[in-house]
Length: 298
Image (cartoon, rainbow, N blue to C red; front, side, top):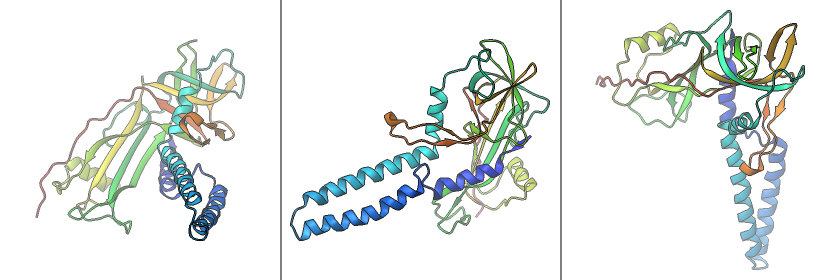
């Protein structure tokens, strides 16, 4: 079993404090250029009494900021990786060479070990994740349910993957996907919201309360959102990784180095580095939606 929980917290933090995929060096160059251009444009505006250069500078600055914001937003949504996954052609396993980057789309089958989702208790899973979000204020502390809230922040995460099999539909070859212990995995699997505590809810359901208590989490009145995602046996899964052959066993493992998505100029997206085995899914079992609607106790 492979614990991906820590990487989820790392990615979540980076999403709010990093300008990736914009390189830091580019920002160090752009910021001084902005102040220099602003000073020159103001000089032309005041001394020369010509507003053309100032208008041009404002428009250019707006376009650059929009480009950075667009790439930052799409980096958070992993849009470049999704596009890379969709554009990468399915590989012919029979002709694929050793250590070649390959893509397979087929039905997943559990290996020697399977997973169970944390909250919904979905069995026979090859991947499972449960995310708990809380609404926090500017001080990054949980706010009271009766007060205003500002944004959702990840407060608890369970995310696991394990080795599994995938059947190549073209050849019928059964391939081992090494997503278990020690593997770097990039799951492109969306979680579904199963619980959302509201302003009319203060009494938690017994199941949710027990789930929180088992993990030493607070059961105080807060805005909470619980999301869960999983890939059960029989799901249609897409995997991109490096091919490895060991006698008659065909395996897909994480690439030894970083893979770049390349520039996607049609979408105005800069390259994004991919470090790990990519696992996506076409048909995900959607957890049962539920809503905590108990009245507030005054």
